[in-house]
Image 1 (cartoon, one colour):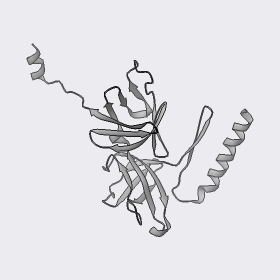
Image 2 (cartoon, helix red, strand yellow; image 1 turned 60 degrees about the horizontal axis):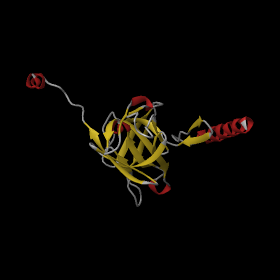
Image 3 (cartoon, one colour; image 1 turned 180 degrees about the vertical axis):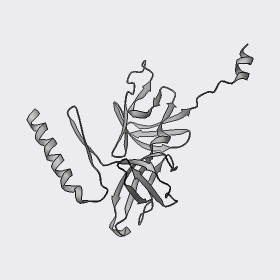
Length: 197
């Protein structure tokens, strides 16, 4: 079994290396446990050249990629907004009808995703570095998070981001749609301390 995994990993690496001629399509192979997953997501920061119909992404590798947000008959699925400097995850593809431009099929603002989210029965914090802080009394507490091919993996579950706004998050999987609201950190002021006395 171990030999099979090694051969499969080497084969995937050869395929990825053979695709190196294609511009800006970066694939990362992740091996975790018994599963092998290829992530087609490109990560970076929202650049200053971002406009209403285009996204300028300064990738983690230092490249600048410009994605169009409108296709021939479709618009990009942008979740969390586009703000210069925010960390962004993009699933893109090269479209022939768009003069070979890159089209952003799905855009997730990772900076907007960070924070504490709660519903009637769940409360968790999506933190930087892939960690999730959640109530340990829950039957299946989330422990880690990542984006994999445009989906949010909250270990042990995988979701589509149905909607991400400034104060709301809707996640969808085969069991349904789950809604969460953003918990605001309460700032204690001197007046609060005086009122408590």
